Image 1 (cartoon, chains in turn cyan, red):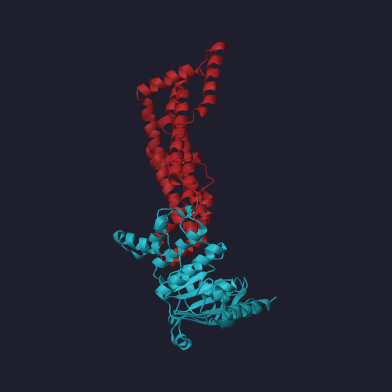
Image 2 (tube, rainbow over the protein chains, first blue to last red):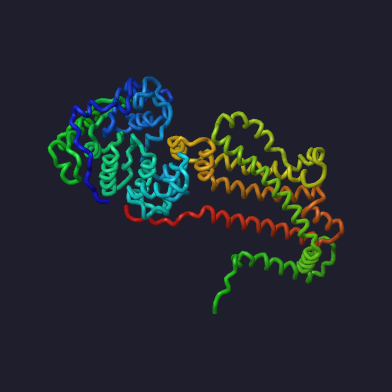
Length: 270
Length: 258
């Protein structure tokens, strides 16, 4: 997959501040099985922002994502989407899970997995076919439309999950360590692809990862969490130009400086 | 020389055929002349006779109607209950005690009750088959539904599927292999109970035909029916297995590039 030109403009900082809040967490506590998982989380994700969430495992990153997805209610505090409290999942908020193998329907072909979204929308069958093809083409799976997930490689299965989310035409992507189970080459290809897709549609991204370099490479902002209980500890703005480049971006002083800062931050826990 | 390709594996028949020949030889050589066992060749004769006069096919139809209808009703109830109790733990709490109380009652022990309700005939047999075939279907469906990957149910939730769509497009396909095992077990139980009820009480079908042959002192016919019951059961099971392989064919593994 080649990296096509990324049209996303580099936003001046003041413009970013002015964008309305897409996802807002305010004083959020989560208690699960008598254990305090999240404590007093305040976090705003602005519209069009690519926000990366990092932190050691067990610090509540996934819990925060599940709150945003409407899969889990907060014990205390508020989670809002465009100002309205989130009480249940919404179709314009798409979730990409790390375990693509479990998230895909193994008895449906690639096309069938995408079709599921259109079926639940009640779209007539005649209209579905061209939509499915369009979405599969966007992730480079058009030639594999009739294959079952088990016949696809890990990277292709994750692409398929992304295609299924694309079918939802989401305004917000929630991605839970989506590339954590993939090999480095495939991971790099998919990172560039997701940036291209996001740039084309101008969506908001809430991206959970434990890979610091991935967070810097992808994000407009990196939010770092600390565990026991999970809380937002620090925010790092990523002032790297877009489109980002696989070879050049990681060599920029700003990238290296951020990487150093993030490593220091993570090391401080140990 | 080209090999003749049989639609089944002939090797499975080697042992039964040898046993039949041994039985024939044993009876002929021992000079046995009683009325309790019959020579395999006499049994074959009895089978041909019963097949030609239509009595065997009539009895088979009667048994299959009872077993099939009972399986449909019992299996259907088991399937619906398995899905509902699997999806909603509250339902399980509500129904666990009555279900566990009914289950251990042997079907045969219910014969007097269903005779009072339905009298002799298809319905008493169907009700007993239904009662028996409900359980395997229910337990395996319940387990299969409980075993559906939570991630898939989350995907259904995220796409805002309603209950019917969720069951039809996610739960049933995901649980289908387990449900199918339940169906096969229910089917086996249905045949056994149908023939048992016919032997014990109901003047219908293959079981009754065997009782009748015994009363007429026709061991050849009784054995012919016995083998026929085995053959019918084997045929049904083979058909179901073929269907299962067709339905749940695992797509060939073999991934192409990333």
